[in-house]
Amino acid sequence: MYYITNHNGQVIAASSDLLALLEVENIDALYKQIALDAIEFALEDDRITVKTPLDETHYSVEKETLSSILGEMTLVRLIAESQEESTLEEESILPLEKEKEEAPLPFDDEEALFDIKEEKKEEEEVGIAPEAEAEAEVETAKAEEDDLLNLILPSSAEETIGTIAQEKGAAKAPVYIDVEQISQSIGISPEDYNTFLTEYIDTALSLEEDLRSNDPGKRTAATHTLFHLSNVLRLPVITEIIEQLKYTEEEDIDSSIESFYDTLSRLTTTKPETAKGEETKLSVEREAGGAAENFESFGTIDLSDVKPIHFDFQVSEAAEELSLPAELIEEFIQDFIKQAHEETDKMLKAYEKGDLETIQKIGHLLKGTASNLRINPLSDTLYEIQFCDDPSKLEALIKEYWAHFISFETQFNLKSQH
Image (tube, rainbow, N blue to C red; front, side, top):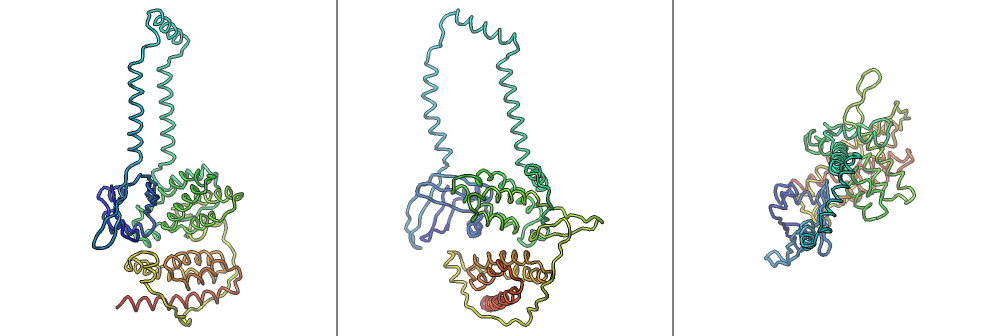
């Protein structure tokens, strides 16, 4: 397997077997997955780690510099480390096997054979049958392995969530995931979303040891993987907890990890019902409480009279800084504009209810995307909203954010028409 990078280190070509391994149809699909951080090639000297949402695979590499009309390129050939290890093992085992074959038996006379047969007979008489015992151990191990597989490879997201709840002893209120709404917003089917959610939970379970590891590298890799996947699946409650893990002091790591798995155990794709049997639709942006929360309204905000605050934003500059095609940046911006309208409506409703926590979470969600796209004035104001604890300052901050946003949206729409 191999891939080719240009002088900027971007993947511009890949062999068909590598594309098949990564389950992408073509180089365009691979490029987009790399841009979204869903697939990552971490190259270090003569080794590389290929990271996907589901696993990490390590390879040895051979690099060769190519000269082309497009400039200098690099051919990177991937060699499965398991193949190298297998070859080394075979080379080391063969001499041992040969020695074993040539070695004389530890006994050459009938008396020694007779003694061994007598010992075996005595063992059988007292109920010790080595072969039967070995078979029993194998069966027991197999049963335990099957139990483990049943635990970590459930048939549905609900089953996985239930498993975590039992493991972690969670007894708090559920956090509802609106699969229909989220899957539609990210452009996949509800069935696929459920599959990805199940895989995410499985991944989270498998990475617990790395999260608790004393090795900073393992912790960072696990945190990065879980943060990215929760972001892709639109699980802001989970994403926020993982982000906090990055900055948690050593002595508080365990409690933060417990909080993560506790919240994970309370995810549900089934709409909870009230005592009267009426369905209560809860959002993943906000955890469900056992009883209705009583907020004191902050008032209302009218954004219709907000005047735009102009700032210059160039798609080409963002594309160059991120080393991505301008067309891909434009697609991301279109998604962000749609998301911003939806989340701003939620923010205004939360303001009317006096729900500061939801406003802060929406600010955090939008800030992350604006920052990734290098829309700095938006990102800066949303950052202030995220950490604003004084409700009296919220109206001015929200209007400032919206003034920047409508200027940005108008500017982008005008440029995209030409």
